[in-house]
Length: 201
Image (cartoon, rainbow, N blue to C red; front, side, top):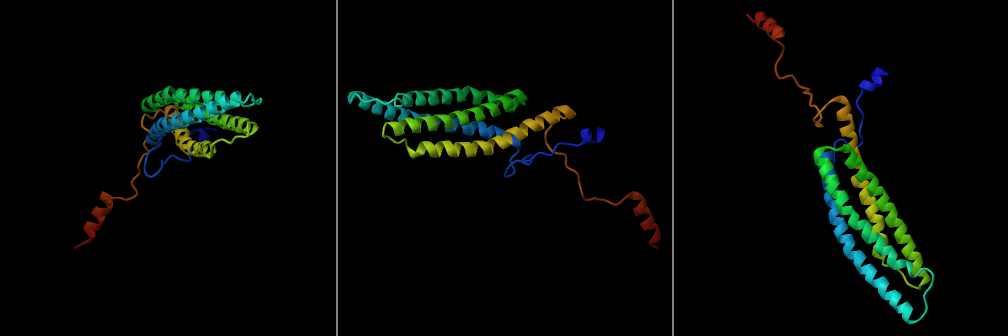
């Protein structure tokens, strides 16, 4: 048991990406999430206006299906979830800088919940649009799929950094930089050097 406890954990992305450490990549992930949320809110506002226009058109014709009224509320929910990303990302950036494991793990759990919620919202919106003989924008499907893929990429570095913090605290190390071991000996041992000099006449 002591042998396994003394061994270090092997992390998948401990070396970072393109020479950038997991801590810096985690910080970039938070910035990326904020910028993506800004763009997402712009698109969702346009989709909400589109759904409200459709709902007014259906009301003017006195023809409203059971699922049409769900569409605006789906977009309202998506906008509220996007607004909640701002305090979560700010707290995550603070946690990365101060090396708070709880904040980093909370961000990891929030992103998973957020992506799942967005996928459910897109599916419900699509079903409601079909009932109203209407189709949602292809950008909504593209945005949901691409967001899941990119979040999985960034979360790999976030969870790696969190695990490195856990290991660092368990071993008592304050620095997360890997220790460098020199493989080349710059000068020969003094004892061998002395013997060599004695043999020379």
